[in-house]
Length: 126
Image (cartoon, rainbow, N blue to C red; front, side, top):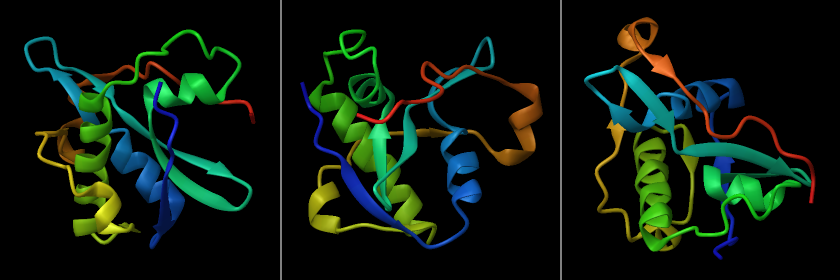
């Protein structure tokens, strides 16, 4: 179980980051369905990027996904790397050095043509 949270500093309005994250994840291109992988999580005045499986561990459904894999964390790091390059967040690059995973980014102009299905929507405080 990997519950090490990736702390980030938001450089823009958090709504922009959340909207961007809603368009990054695993895509079924034939059916035009996107499953976002990462969420912005706020706790005690700090901001974190977390994989959706980690969100379950933070909430009251901790046993729903207790199999956060290295691949999941690598995807999280790749998404953090993108957000850092886009100047949306700042993050310690040493913490995301393993970011060689391809991530699908749905262009904003195509968002209306796709169905976005979140596997996790909200979290209760731990």
